[in-house]
Amino acid sequence: MTPNWIDLDGVANMRDLGGLPTSGGGQVAHGVLIRSDNLQELPPASVARLVDELGVTDIVDLRTETEVHLEGAGPLRSISSLVHHHHSLFTPEIVAETDTTLPWHDDRDVDRTTAEFWGGHYLGYLHGRPDSISAALRVLAGASGATIVHCAAGKDRTGTVVGLALDVAGVPHEAIVADFMATAERIDAIMARLLSRPAYAEQLRGSTVHDQAPQPLAMEAVLAYAAEQFGGTAGWLRAQGWREADVDLLRNRLRA
Image (cartoon, rainbow, N blue to C red; front, top):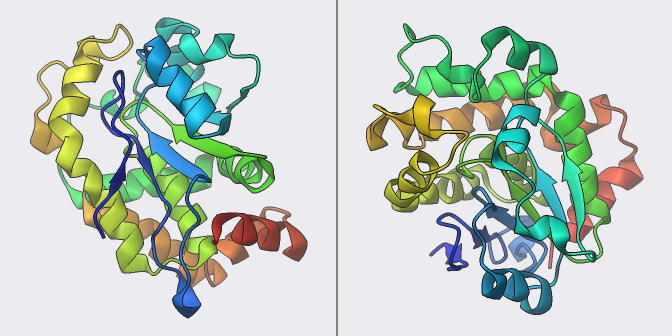
């Protein structure tokens, strides 16, 4: 499928997941789940389109406390109709230990260009912050309008949460991976944005587009882990304390 890009001034990697195929011949509903990169630079016209035209009611922010502090409140914080949910995918201890904005950039001796690195990194979100992932998906299940899930690039943390949500909806794994890889189309613009931002410029300086490009095996590793260990993301959520009715609510919310 062609990605359902939402082209707005102030973002580079925003798209609606509506239209992705689901099991049984269905599809993901439009106007329910939007994924994005950093939302700090949205001008008033972009904010108005998100709220007034696209019906956004909830923002799930997966950045660390350090990122939120350095980047500031952002233009969406002043919109009273929006509900903001902060669920970092790194523990405060990890952030404190690394003393970096992007904790995975702390170890300079690790080759961060490999699928093996990113696959292990994504699984680290599930092992380290299952509470945040579960909470983010609960927001999506209960939101009255569209939910934007975002981090910095809209690739790794956002990709993990969105991939798990789509798995619950019954989207085939190959379609989830294809959506994840769509970010590669915008990686140059994403890098340019982040290199201009105070929270990311220093750590990303010297990184190449190749370093930051999405790796399909990373998303495949997350989906395979959920399938092999829990029978899928729905089973993983049950292991986090979700009832069957909760899982059904998320699934039904996502499907058209």
